Image (tube, rainbow, N blue to C red; front, side, top):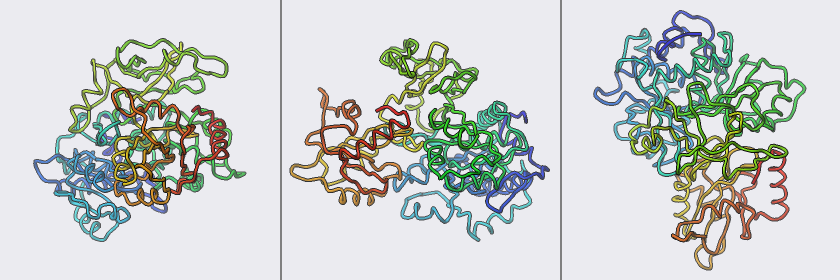
Length: 550
């Protein structure tokens, strides 16, 4: 295990190491070639970024070799990478890029349509898979690590600006320094016994903190190799694992469920994979995964902010995530008073008996590695109230200190590992001429996370036209790929509270089992059908199969 205080030092340690380090299709780069490429890009970046500005670059790429090369380059140069989410659209995408003050944006031809017609003043766009890019980079081929720096490099140097969605407003860019990223990599590498001979399969998107913090960083810390899949593919997963000799992977959201949905094969256990690490697989599907593929899945809890972490520990009960990570003083408290909640009590089958008193918000009362959000002091203050770090997530704790996830404290939705803001989707739905009022809220996904449900009150006398609604959604440039409602409830009037606010609690409580007509995007292709008794029965069977409560 390499002991270091910065990511730059980890990158520099690769110099002279001619073992395979980066695999992508037929391309194989050695550790030495990776640091050579990173040094060249660091030198180019030093010439491109304007003096006096923030040393930030945006990266809008799939998982190609250019992504980790630019991460390494930024570390060497003392710059920060803003991971740009390609599922964002239009003005929302432009806002993300401009908010980070990135004067250079690294992208590829496949994503150029996303940038068409966007106003990005002061941003230079480099397109990696072009002759112009190769020509621009060529003069820097002889650079060595440390030759070009935009700012002094130390543990406190900004390294990542990774977006994390909140309940309202635009996504926030969480700051991660070189010291924290290097420390996270070393911690996970030690915890999971990562060896220099391992290969980490990175199939989760690198614009997301999971792939960088939990996959790339521990490989870098241990001197292991990485293998890249541009985008997650369940059907290609095992072939990739075998071809690359992968031993470790990370996952978020429904990835595990997609893998379990592939046809079973006699050679499902014929592979070198030994461990998967991630979130939201669920105890039932983790057991199915191990039974079918012979691979242990370890569930964890953490975020790009780094304010609190839960680690799986020996003896962790089914359904629990684990205990507080070393150094964290985690507590489940009342969100209003801050008083600690009593331990959970369980009945037959592990059913929670005292949810009303046991469930509260998870806070970290000890020293926290939370490093703030970029240019968002209000969000910083909200996270760090009373000197504690408030996660914004609901948990309960059993008598032995094991922690169980119970939901979110606000109107966030988590769809396929992406946190979405209800208000953003509501603002889009408000544009539909037939809608008089709209409310967006989460209903549980049958397997993990949430699905988007919308309640619509239509203008007087207007029937709901599912085809027109689908056409409207497809025409919205800022509707991200995971924002479209899976369920649409049609009401005569929107339920409101005594203060005339939309009664979201009532809407969430009823979900799609309500007296009003509910239209259902059954196949996830935008075409809605009426949710009839037969469809409802089939849905409820899916929830029962995966042990998910409504």
